[in-house]
Image 1: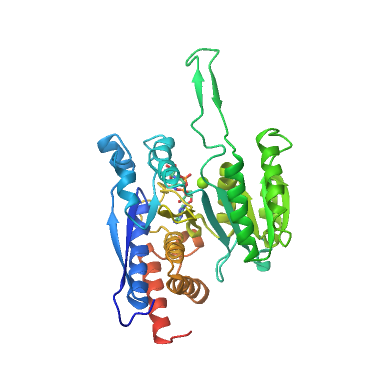
Image 2: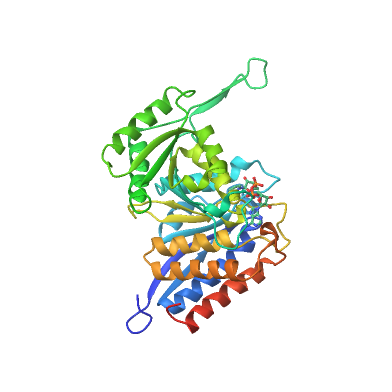
Length: 366
Ligand code: NAI
Ligand code: MG
């Protein structure tokens, strides 16, 4: 959308900074979005909510009972991170993240693991490049409420946790991943474990094969998740698109994040691809209590997540400008936070990204 003439587009976006470093990396991301909005002709109306573990401690809930209704009024949700060491982790996950992902049918969790120029990977052969796109199933699978605990506190105590796999759930995530593979190198690996998990994972494999029959131009392959995890470390340059269940995708993307330099780099999108409901964008990392308050959290995962949000909202040019600015900072300067081996603060990296954006405007087309 052009900056000149006509009325500017207004985009309402819910902001949930959350806890710990979520609150430190969110302001730089909002500022970056405002900068590109000014340049590309849109305004974002930030609607900030304090929902977090802090909020839980004060009110007994991660969000108010009408929380989902309020979020439904926005075009997208930008989330920092939630989690507090004084509370069990399932409080924040089941009190906020999972209810949002499920209420808005955000069944795709898209997590790029891309090594940027100037960033050091802990892997020896990283000069061959790393550019993996993980598509994690985000609405069912192993993260399920079905189950329970019987005979609590007795020697017979046991717990049952059911994983839920539906034909519809597997089909739609595999289709999404195969469509993405078509825009890339047309290679898709499905994470499985059907040698050990003989009911749900054999079903997953079967549906994967049925969907892939509709994509003869995409090379589809099944790989056991343990072998695939090793592959992320030994041959990441050979991986293109990877699709996995909720748990497998979760684990593989933490590996993906560290091999591209740091947990602080990795962005993610919780997508409702049909656009019926708002999608949610968040860095892969958590609230990092070990560094919270020190002002040294890497803001790039959050800024990159905001760029994914703009792309999803149809502002592709502004998203590309943000990614170019991140490339410029990491590739052409030594300004980086301690997780990347530097000594810069969150604010210094944020300022460098803003400067790189300003430099693009001075040399348009660059
Ligand atoms: P974490 O991602 O918060 O931290 C893991 C390690 O990575 C820590 O050493 C941390 O300092 C480092 N790290 C993470 N982000 C960084 C950044 N931006 N810059 C520099 N270093 C960074 O994972 P952890 O420690 O397992 O979890 C901490 C809390 O966060 C827990 O309460 C957990 O439940 C929650 N969590 C929340 C998530 C979310 O909101 N989506 C996702 C993952 C964890
Ligand atoms: Mg995780």
